[in-house]
Length: 524
Image 1: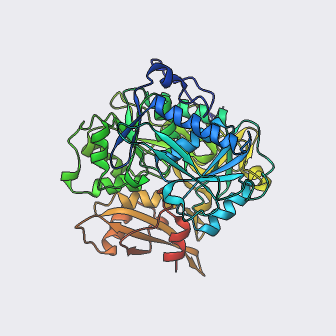
Image 2: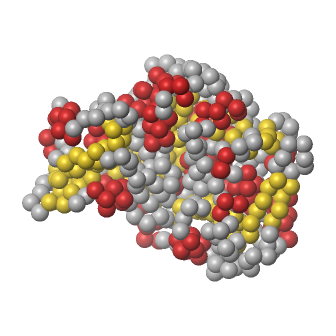
């Protein structure tokens, strides 16, 4: 009899996550239990905003939106950085019954307008830093100053309702969010998430890391993607903890550790590129182990190489837990768990968290443990499909499963190991090369900080394997030395035939390697 590999989530024994139904009641428990506890620490001045104050601002904005004509089910765009305006707009619009679509404020105006038109935004709310890029919007301003009452200002005179067309068919009565996929290799798609999806996702993150009122974090990742939104912001607030919104609404390595110390951060979550940045800083930038009172750090949204994981754990003195997530699952599908020591499997993204995961072969049959296939995910946080894109929905969803397009295998204990993306595979004379696997090996070279592997067109073999690498500070090695390092660790067909040392690699807004830009820039 053949053994097949599937893995399901296990409920933690000693921790119970907060009960909630979606965005509307996200703050209910902390407002009842600890209304005067700090919910947010805002900007360069690090002004504290309590749970009662945050709920009051959200209610005020909800009333203003309703009075201005926003109705339940209306799609509302939100263009803002990691600021108090983002948080209040998100919660206020949700309390008004709107479906909120956070968008990257750095998008060019044409692309921003196209996305707003694609889902028929009834109106767009924008923060102070985004006003110039979104002229047809309602600016939101939040006054948060020490010793003064907090206040909301909403300017509804700059744009009429319905400017971006009619509401897109396909939205449901329980929808809470419309989020865009990363689009690292193709166009971004719109994912509708219900309040139930959001609630399930938030509870999963809280349960995995046992987040509670004593926890605090810094909002490193952009809040317009699920990594920053669900894991850092919503889960921390639902647990009654505190989120610091950095000056300018964006991550800065120059102020990160000061921010962490100022808020007494117990954890943070980021992409591997940011972990590498923190690791590359001078030793004086790093706090001593457990100062601030870190319990753990977390990595998601891109492959974390084992060398970086071990180095950062040594530097910080706490575990760096690798998690696996995607927009279509409202972020987290699996994660390494908190210690006890010795339970972590480096190279793994842990076991399912609130989901069921199976690895399948091309015929759709479950693979035995250790055998590579496509990763499929199902569970209460998984979206129903893509908005207004039936072809993509049919390709990516079916039978209750999300077909992720990721390659990996489950071990005998149900831990998931990712090995690449199906569409990223490089066909070298019939041999399939996983860029992600080769990148992990390259990053194990002591001189290499980051790597990107790609196919270089070749008339005879289809593609050759190429690589671009960023060296660590004060390292100076020749590409031939890196090739020699790979020869001992890769199959001959996997070894890059062409390596270029570059000062930096392109990344998407959420910090993942931008493979489309890599291909255009280096694959010649």
